[in-house]
Length: 209
Image (cartoon, rainbow, N blue to C red; front, top):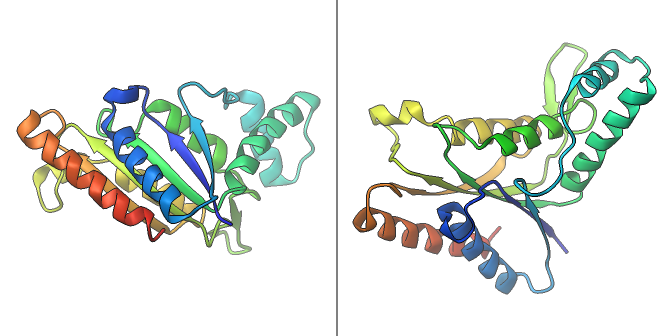
């Protein structure tokens, strides 16, 4: 039985377009996968350990084969617990609004905790990298106030989806399925049809992921 980790990166609750599309996915996913285990992780309310000096030093200890001090070990153990939760699922659902053309800061914090040597990525003797989370799948529900269609001048301002999908691929999660609702700041004539279409796309995706 697969398990889904539902990662909420919006603080706006019922006003959030990314969460609305993600909730449509979850409802359809439950129908398509009876008995599925779904864990919700709200990045704005869940406690996450700091990525501070002891944590960074612990990361370099791992990279260079050095021992930890007690403080560094405690910091690293907290990171490992976050990663173990993430690795314990085989399906992921992200609800991600665009903030300043990129991602909300708690999601970047979460990513900085997840991307660790020997846990989510490895290194070859030649100095290359490989992801350690192969075989997992992710669905990402994006919301954007503007419109960033491929081939337009606005596309260059979208640092939301390219970054998130790149970093998931770096960890080995390359089977990624994005759904986007755009133009949420353009008024109901643009926003409402875009949101409805994204929700329908999310429901269809949920049946096959």
